Image (cartoon, rainbow, N blue to C red; front, top):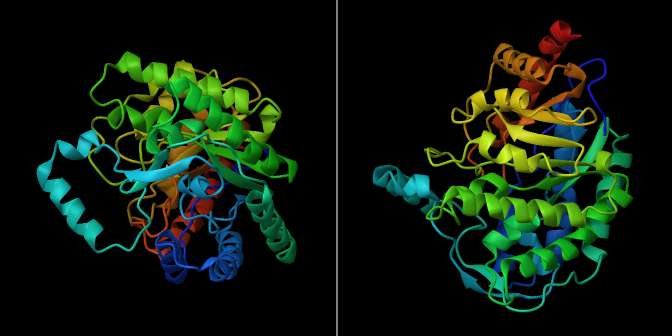
Length: 387
């Protein structure tokens, strides 16, 4: 895992805008239309586009933009056995507190063509097993071919994979005798993807919004201790799934949900950080740009990272069309570096992805690239001061 040896390196959280025609194909696939060949072609074209755009924006550690997946975790339903039926996720506790806002959000959703990560999603109705490596192998092969064709534009490439916890929370357990048994099955299945990504020479990023977000979704009516118990069980499962992955080849992203909303029911970072520190990973990707959590970089003082760990600090908001000023970005970077105590262990990125489920983005594509360009400029300003 690269560190910021002479300057602050830039990255992002994974998902990047998908073209409308690709979103349309994913929606058609969800309706069981035979579009696999068209999807494969459109996915590779979108992959080529986002790699090129990341290079133009000056991203140092980039990825495939998750173009060949319909959502950051829902794609597992086609790569694993055991899923079927449908249910709708519990509502977000913070949105429920504000009926006027909820109504406005519902009106906005009606006009969006998107792959839903909340409604009509499957549950576990049988044994969960990974089908075969073909899909993840192809994704890795396509990414490598694109990198080679574009003269390997990144200091380091990465690919994402979901936490067993977000799959367990979103794809409800209707089969296993306990949550622990379900988590263990998911961890064993996802281990295939974790190990394949690293075997292809890519940095692995685990996407784990469950480690914070599920407090105000699945556990909104339960005591904090019950939620912390869930976090601890997921952390144990992740560590077991990473048994063959070197610590320095994996970073972990946690967040409170990639949506514009009140977020006043979010669990505080200091409540979960003692458990997150048990994770056997080389770094964390945490959001410090949005108005609800921008102060929490200070938690890095209270719970210092290990000497071999890095922080990817979110200094760009992924749900607003404001383009952050480079000087504002630089100030955010410097605050994080001061909290960590060593700028070499600080990288910077976005709070979350820009299109976590196909069609769900709230930021216009041209503004996404402008935000990432501003990220690079802010990193340059901060680097001049910190190094």
